[in-house]
Length: 76
Image 1 (cartoon, one colour):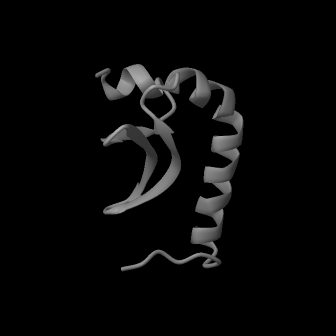
Image 2 (cartoon, rainbow, N blue to C red):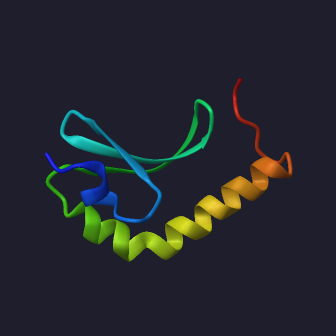
């Protein structure tokens, strides 16, 4: 299995294997994450994340903005 940096590069994302899938996520706060994608391990994860990088960054930025403004709340 590849290490996390090999798969996510400099995206700031983290990865966790779950059975035959990878859970791609971004840590937000202590104990809080934003799930970005769930991908089969057989897929070309670096290529998929590279192609989707702009969209992922835009969506994460919007989620963080909504959390900061109180439009979204994180469970305690």
